[in-house]
Image (cartoon, rainbow, N blue to C red):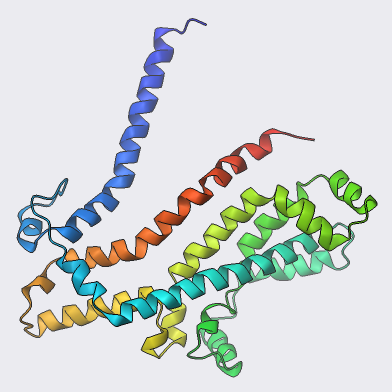
Length: 287
């Protein structure tokens, strides 16, 4: 089909806009990386950093030599993997049960769950509960109290409701019970939603900071974000007190910290991208 000039101009405008949007989105990451590998003098000489004129890895060498970095990486990795696994199991099981029409008391349970989105128990009561359960200064205090997200639960439940009942009925006729239907039918059909919510949980676990400040006092159990914050504060205090290391004046160490905490999440996303694409098209086909 012949396309008119207006349609071609419109497409060109769309491509230009998307390219500009992509540049605006990617530039902060690129700027952080460039600042993390350039000397202090080059950083102070310009406010825009498109490419490095000189490269130095002092910032990364300074951070990587710390033993506390690797222990905090291990804690964050454990929290992310184990915490996400527990959260997904709890979310899937609860969402599947609440998606059943014949579940007695479902409305009451849903009301109580949604109620927690509007009114929380409060900071002090939550702290007291964690302390009474003996979770203080334990990595489990960063996993168990936040094992379930009401928002993610509602999304997962609504997704399970979209699964045709005829598939479940056919599976039960073939001899499957509810657990078999969930594992063999519902979960494979819900992989886009599961992958998306799993990524939400994983990113929140990886960026765990506030709860660690409240519940963790042992430095050996600090997650990565808390360690990086402590390191930056110590370097700032060292400079203000007249420290003899001029390198600490620059932003390189700060941006290196940003890259260290960001890169693992960026490496995980490509493995989930295809599920996001599938999730965008699921609503286009109706039974």
